[in-house]
Image (cartoon, rainbow, N blue to C red; front, top):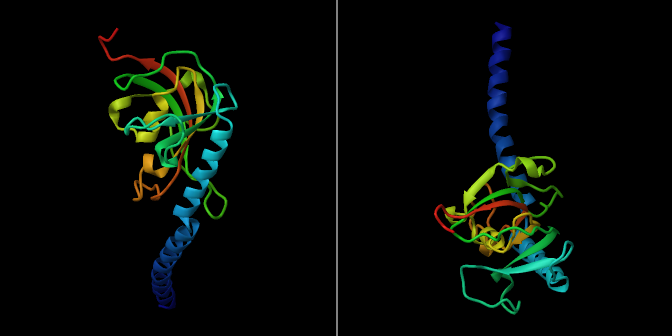
Length: 202
């Protein structure tokens, strides 16, 4: 009888603790994103400054890409959120894709550091070190990438390997999306392996 009472008491205690723990986790998660909009805006401002000071075409320099969706110039006088900032890691010399083409790519997508110093990966086609021989993800450029991601790809050549920094305005915007917090700068380690033209196109 006593064992039965201890069991029931234990179950009631567990039921009381679980909701409390859940709320605590939510609060901690909110703390990780404290001042998220301001932190992301400051971060992309600093990236833009570095990119403008080191604009070039060789590995180690930066390429600044204007969004393909809105009219604008490439003189870098527009708003910071009109551009994608790309650090060149490796330089390719293959074909540059058109919007109708299919591309084979490898990437890891991350956010900026959370308040505890950790970095969350929100999407990836591989883990560990990049193996260029096993790039498995192929997709049409018109299939629904965020604007900043497509804008970068439309300026890459086969064999290019870039770090791509996308302002939230060219990413998922102000609202949360599939686990990605609103106002998030998107950071992609992006490799373009292959470009395949639309079937029948010369």
